Image 1: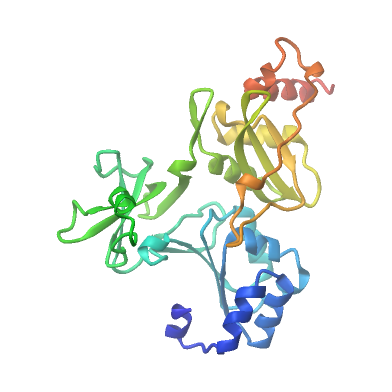
Image 2: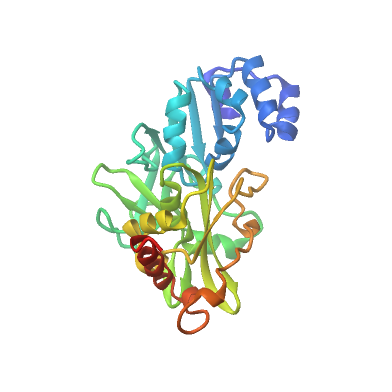
Length: 327
């Protein structure tokens, strides 16, 4: 709200309450955009992708000046779709609430180079190892934020504050905030995010980042949105991937694509097509509400029962052989 007022646009008091109640509905957003000649909008990528399914919304944003997304990873497929729909400049913003939200920004033009951009003025980003030493370009580590944007801590929560806010070892008399995000620097001085550190889970003894799996599946042509989660089925941990597309995509195609970009232990055990991904009230993908998938009939498996569940690479190899042999 303050960013909009700083740039000059006005806002009617009664619009604020109405927006809180109803802007989760694409038709209401269309009415606001057209009724007030809105030139700028901001929302999460998953909510924007859901709104784009409404033809009237796609038409309404055609002449917008700028669209800003944040709060989630930005799918390449979403950028491609927006470029075909609107003349607006597309921005990817990063920043947690503890640092007054936005701390970096990137205008997106190439679907192959989606980053969180460079730090904004008076904001500093650090990619550090567990001992708070700076890491070189291309090496993932813990992302910290410094600068005047960093808050003082959590109100009435001193223990939580101690875990997230520290004295900046690189700047005197300044606090630094531990975001909990994994990130690395590019050669161009931009930040690439790799999901939440606390979302990383171990699968068969190996550390897996579900958001990285989702980003890979989401970049496949024709996939509009994707998500992934690790759950337990029949007493065994299973990595499941979900996607939304206009038509079903052969599982072998998605597995082959995933194997090109992911290590073998991050290949999903099952891939499920959904009409839409569940989202939270804030518009982010609600991974806890993703449905439990149905695994293939155990009778089709050769060898020890359940081996395919425990070894997704075995299932991937089997599917590839079937495809090659035209079985």
